Each structure stands twice: as C-alpha cells, then as structure tokens.
Image (cartoon, rainbow, N blue to C red; front, side, top):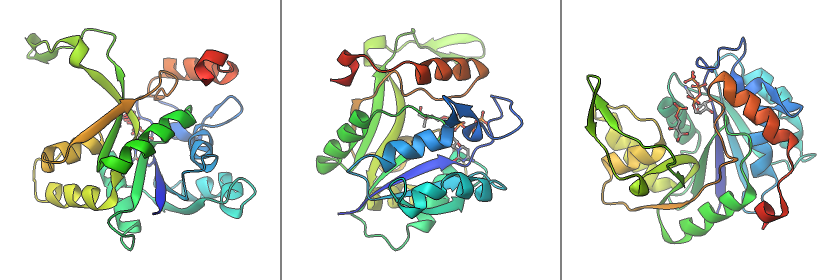
Length: 242
Ligand SMILES: Nc1ccn([C@@H]2O[C@H](COP(=O)(O)OP(=O)(O)OP(=O)(O)O)[C@@H](O)[C@H]2O)c(=O)n1
Ligand SMILES: C[C@](O)(CO)[C@H](O)COP(=O)(O)O
C-alpha cells in the first residue's frame, strides 16, 4: 500500500505580508517549505511526496527541493505541480495529479506553512489510517472559543469539547476523491481544511482525531515567524522526544 504526502504550498502568504510566499522564507537557516518536505522525506512510512506550489514559483521550489528528488535527501519528491487560487483548489490539483492511484492509497495532506512536524505525529496519522478512512490531527483549545454573529456571542461550545486542527490530515484516497466530487456540485462550497470537506459532504465517514503537537505551528502572521525562529533554535527536550 503506497503512502503519499501532499505538501500544500500554493498560497501567497497575504497575512504574513512578505515580498515572497511565506513558504520560501527561511527559519533556522532553511526555507519553511524545505522543513515541511524534510519531515516526510525522513519518515520511513512515506513513499512519495507531491508538492503543490504557488503559481509562478514552481521553478524556485524545484531548485530548492532538487536534493529531495535525486536521492541525496531521500529522493521521495516525485512531482512539483502548480496550485490553485484557494487551498481547496490546490488539494484538487493534487487529486488530479494522483488520478491514476488506487482508491486505497493513503494520502497525508500537510500545510507547507507548518515547518516543525514531529515524526510522532506522522506515526499517529498512519496508525489511525489503518482503521479509519479519514484522520485529523488536533490539540486541545486553550482559549475560550465562541461563535460570534453581528458582534454578539451566538454560542459557546464547552472548551473541553474543542480541538484546534493542525495538519497533516490523512485519508484513503477514494474518500477524499468522493468528498471533493460532492463538493464540486455545491455552488456555496467553501472550506478551510480537507477534513471539513469530508465531514460536510460524506458525514457518514467517521474522522478519527489523533494528538497533534504544539510545535507544529502554522506560520500565518509576522509574530509566528519570531516563534518559529525560536523553535528552530530550541532542541526538543528529552521528555518531548519520548
Ligand atoms: N491557494 C492556496 C492557498 C493555501 N495553500 C497552502 O495551504 C496552507 C495553509 O494556508 P495558509 O496558511 O492560509 O497560507 P496562505 O494562503 O499562503 O496564507 P494567507 O491566507 O495569509 O494568504 C499553506 O501551506 C499554503 O501554502 C495552498 O496550497 N494553496
Ligand atoms: C488546515 C488548517 O491548517 C487546519 O488548522 C487550517 O484550516 C488552514 O487555514 P489557512 O487559513 O489556510 O491557514
């Protein structure tokens, strides 16, 4: 059974506001995109890596990731393709590139903007995919989270029921395909992640949630870059490595 990591790097980093897409910025001396790819390249459970890159930056990604294509750094990057205008369109581009893969293929979709993905989180996703067709990675909410409408609190789900989703999110390819096929028929389609697409369009498919990791942050705003530099410089403690 093949396991493919899809690294979604099709965004432009509008909220970060840098001149280049944020995944090309360096933290700890190497580009954020390379950190994300290296996490999968170094994991024995991953067979291939598909990178979905922002329009106009595919050549830059190919140059940067050349060692990951030749074998010098694992040789697992098999394709670098152009993404779409939204994250979901980039996932669709990945699905098109994987059109010849069997339904049972395992795919892990990961934000390139998350440079510090621990191998243990990949382990947990792959273990859960043995039994489940869809897997999410979450960490407990620490703030109180409320739904707000027109400036007023609409609902307050109990915090202990809330999880902040990270990536990777794992699927049997057939399930992800079916969900996106159903979504294509919805004129109001909008999603912020891939589990949301499965949850909405294939509600009968249970989504298993496994533990994420606080280090697996998403570089979104300028302050996240400061935190990322700090994390890159901090070796994991022996407790964290257990
Ligand atoms: N059209 C898009 C938009 C986003 N992504 C990817 O999805 C991940 C999470 O998206 P986000 O953090 O929102 O990245 P950006 O879209 O680049 O950021 P912003 O929304 O601030 O522009 C990122 O790795 C991003 O590159 C993608 O592949 N294709
Ligand atoms: C997929 C995700 O990282 C889960 O938390 C998140 O939804 C991506 O959102 P973004 O707005 O594309 O950064």
